[in-house]
Image (tube, rainbow, N blue to C red):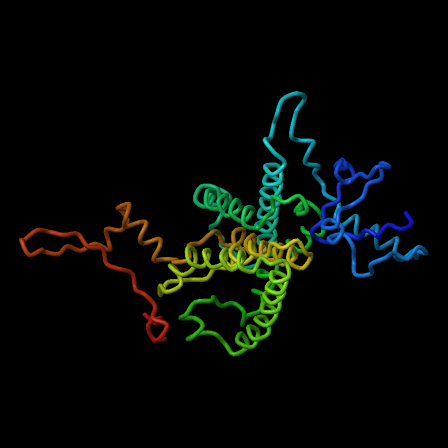
Length: 347
């Protein structure tokens, strides 16, 4: 319409042809309009539209609609007849996020095995559900909440988000085909086994990550949310990372990287949501290919086995005599790698 701004859609804005227009966005003549805050998210850098739109711009608009059209209308599943099925659309959005994640985990699980890429050959759906299922659900729930995926403007059931998620979920498996990239991020391996090519690769990747961080800090300053974001990140690092990182058995699994970083890429901009989808793809890859392995690796497995008195640990048991001639059962601790001494990994 003349005088109206051209509406262009970004990665963060779902398009649903069946969605009803809210009354607060309808003017006195019955024409749908946007308020200033909503308008800023829709309008592209071009500002006012060119009334003589070219065919190429029409084609671009069609592609944008294809990429950002949501597949599942939310309001349709709130009720079945006169019966309330779901309490709110936020619950439906969580189920959509859960469903998309589950589908990609299954896809990647089958993909890497079909093409015989590196994977845990003993990790089946049975082990995934039985041993990792509860933790995976909690990961998804925490990512949904801290990632602000309950917001109306954010959608995960459209092609644009899923394409970035697909690239992120296959990235690790593809680069693992390169021999000098087949190393883990542990203090011991970085100091003792990393080849020089891997250091060069990291030197290229880290600046790209710094650019993403800089963009988020810059935007947080613009919207006056830097303090809130720093508080959220600090608490997550304090509770989830610091207790783990100082231990010699600490292994920074990429499922953990994707989960911890991805949920903080939650601004309503295309580049922030693209980063979120990419990092969530890393999480999906880690779960589908290797499982949700603990950050403390074998030390955590030993702790659980010892704490529950597993019978197979009898080979690690010896007895000691106390000061009053009492007998104590003691478990031999597993060997720990010392990253300062590379020879500790030879035993």
